[in-house]
Image (cartoon, rainbow, N blue to C red; front, side, top):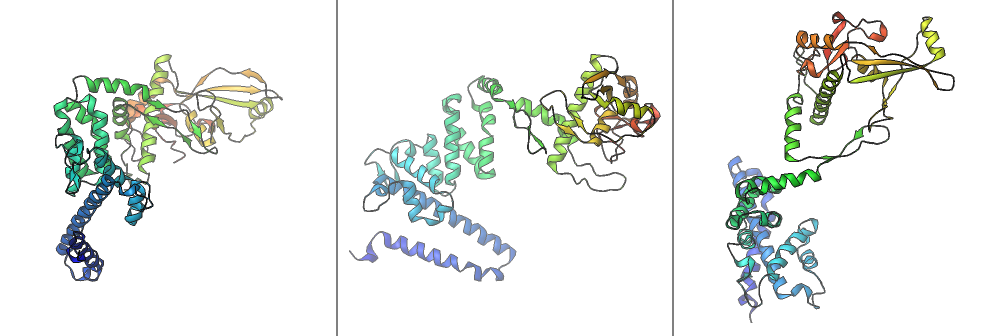
Length: 422
């Protein structure tokens, strides 16, 4: 048969011409207007989509015939066949093309395949997820990645949905993915279950999620930042975000106009620390009159105590967490001084061998009454630009207590940050 009359001839001519013409696109771009650039971009995207759809159909045809396993081809898998004949997919996507094509071929009974596609089976049924996905893939509308994502999502939800809703849900996942991308297509599952799921199924699903929620123990890398891992139920996550979102917004300095240069991650973790600090202070205040969220144990040797009583100045010391999963974590001297402003202070006197020879009584710096008066007086954190409620801040000494500053309202300020450290 004359090669010009074979079925591949027109395909070869069209694809070769398209390839060669697209290779010369760059020579013309500088002469195009803004509107023409946008038009060419759209056309190039449509060509790319159709080319991707053609690759799926070609691979499915080869898989249906068993070409990839043929000894004369020397390739033993669909994936290998795709990588050999579509080199650009070696950079990513070969496995997805192979998977979808092989699933389509495997689901089609022998002899019921024509015009590059299934005539029977799940992928030929427009009412089943496979058929809905296949139709939109071969049209070029849906990419292979989104197609596989939709099939996985619907498979996970299938037993939780009313049967009549399965086609609608499949289409909804595809529509959402076409508009917003793969990640968003995976995130709409709860919304679809709420609307189309069997009655009570979403409640049951959220109850089951509780067993998977966790907060890891702290992990300190090289004595640096402490890292946590966490997974939360939707309810827990919504509570967390509601608590920290108001405090995690950028806070430019209202006096100087200086921008808030903290990263989003830094703002969020500082907001979380503020919320937790406020909760700890509330619990401590409710436990006993004048209770404190922080207790600072000041340890010194007997010789240091005598020297201090004699007026000899001592150096600042670092702190060490004593209780909780964060025990043994070292705190900088400036952090200890800041925490001590709103803490109970206990003096621990050590002997020559480090043994405790005396444990002093708790010394309260700011009382509960004083702190509540600060809530009313200050209203908000007094640090410039900070909008944290005073009840969530700490009572700080304007002149440090360690430097002789009195624990009275005239020397007090509500602040998330030590005013003297700013």
